[in-house]
Amino acid sequence: MMRALQLTAPGTLELREVPVPEIGPADLLLRVGAAGICHSDLYALGLPVRMRDDPLTLGHEVAGTIDAVGSAVTGRTVGERGLVYLCWSCGQCRECVGGNENVCLAAGRGAMPPCPGLGPDGGMAEYIRIPANSFVPIGDLDFPQAAPLADAALTSYHAIEGAREQLRPGSTAVVIGIGGLGHVAVQILSATTTARIIAVDVDAKKLFLAANYGADECVRSDADAVRYILDRTDGRGAEAVFDFVGVDATVRLAVESVAPNGAYRMVGLGGGVSEIAAVPAGGPGLPWGATVRKSYGGTKSDLVEAVALARAGKITVEVEQFDLADGPAAFERLERGEITGRAVLIP
Image (cartoon, rainbow, N blue to C red; front, side, top):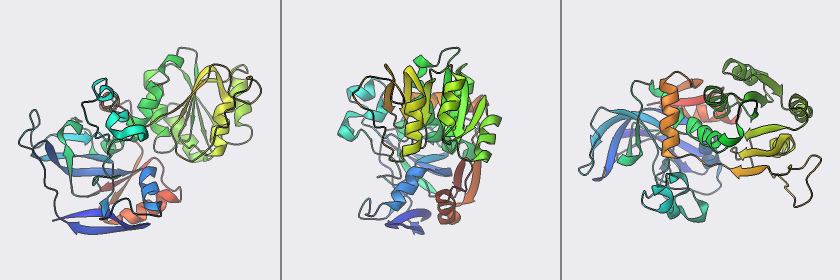
């Protein structure tokens, strides 16, 4: 038996004793070293209906040690340390073969392959069963530092990679929301581009964090934020804007501050509406040539590259650790906005 933090009813988290997962021939059993808490977990907790009939173990940011190897698995050994790539895609369709596992054809128009903790049982537990091909080695990275890379770094890296063409020398990148993903995005931009980085948030503490992690300028998210960004870019706007919040106010800020031919990347899922209209460009609307992309998760290659940055000391995740038994309290603090960086559960 093992302990697992499970969603047992809408809005209800319980620490329960459940059987250790059984693995199939193509699986690995991972002994969990750490599991991050994401806003997607809060979303799952807040759903008014059950995600499945039986209790669901949450957690899709998972780091741990291989405890058992399926009979058909090659190239993996007991004792290896690694992360769980969160897109459990088919591995055979044209998107997967082309390296776009996060939009696997088997997932249909929703384009969200099975993800641990949001369908299959996740890693807020002492053990997790995973497909062997989802394992990404991390070397000697600390588990609490490594676990958030599985989403906070993966998703940030993928959004930035999708706007790489705009991030040339002399460009400006705006990061809206310096939370669990945003503070990692600032570091990825700093490590992999020469763009000027402007961090935007409502919280002065988070802006201070952004400055420590490589932001060149920090601005409070208020009515003057757009004017500040336009003033700093000679009136044209930023070549890339990454919105890690996604509420109406930040969506408007992004649309009004992105440059012509620029890239606006929607990452946060706050339900904001961009109000993009098919009218001549000008004024506060989306300028000519600017693209809007809803960016989900990332590819396995994105995760491998994010891990390489972390192993090189280019990414440091701000974490607050909690015992697995204190998971419900950690969720409450995250919902109240009291977590700087990432909350991480330790079994």
